[in-house]
Structure formats: C-alpha cells, structure tokens
Image (cartoon, rainbow, N blue to C red):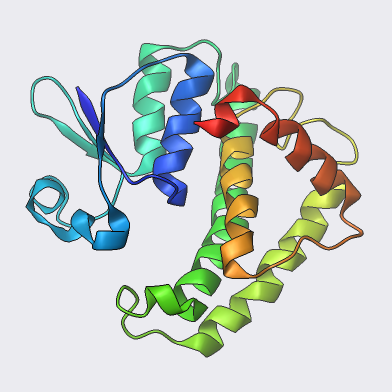
Length: 203
C-alpha cells in the first residue's frame, strides 16, 4: 500500500490528518505539485483526473478522492470514529462534512484557483471575477458556522470528525486565497485554534 501525496495541498493534507488521528502509518510517495508532477505518468496512469491524493492498495486497486480514501480507512479502523457512531451521529457528520466542503472549502478553493498568479497555468481559463465572487460566499458561511459553534465544541457535535478536518484545511487555505475570518467570528476562531493545536494538524 502507498499513498501518492501532494504536500501542503488541501486534499492530500486532509487524508494525512485523518490518518494521524487514526494512528495509521501509510508509506507516502511525495509528488511535487509545484513542478506539475501530478500531471505526469506515475499519477496520471493511476488517476486520469491527475489529482491527488491517490491510494494504491497492495493488490493494485486504486482509490482516489480524499473523503473516499478516509472512508476506506474508517471501515478498516473504526475507532476513533471520525464519521460518527450511531445512525444519527453518522448522518450529522455527513451533513456537516458536505456543508464544510461545498460551502467553505469549495468557495476558498475557487477564490485561490481563479485569483492567485501561481494558478494561471493550472486553472484554464482563470476567471478573476469568479474568484472574487467566491470570497463573500466563504465569509457568509463562516458567520453561519460561528453561530453553530456557539453551542458545541466541534462542527458536527461533541466529537472531533472529518467535518472538523475539512474545516481546518479550508480555513488554513484561506490565507493564500486572501480571505480573512471576520473578527466577530469568535467561536470559529476558538474552534480553529483548538483543532490546530491537535498533533494531527501538523501531519
């Protein structure tokens, strides 16, 4: 088994944090995304979308998409449960995971890919107006999230989950996307500081 990894890019980092929370060690194959190595044969032959991360199992089976990879390891190592415990808990984690992904991470990603000069050769066509349009979408969702975090410790309830991991990488990715957490979002800031202090955040 080996994991083709893209360093500080959000989705590879999401899987590494998840594995760290589980205490699972998987051999990493570093891929230099800055040098566009993810578009070269070792990755493209395994994932025609030429995206990372890519997990190759011992029998040659390929898994792509960060949450799918995380779900695979959740089934193999159910504790600590990062996708919820019972039916309700799993549904709540799924609900918030999708909210964090579609309303926050996606908006931040679009802002970065369509505005940052380093992405000019990656995002074709690069549409700065679309990037700018996504900035207020991310901020609007943070205001909603702040209200939710006023009554609980973690995004999806009382336990740390994949939804918190997605939120962590999204907020950390706001810096290169040039989006700031509003000062009034004190609950978001408290939560982000707490999950950033977990050892897994350094994975």
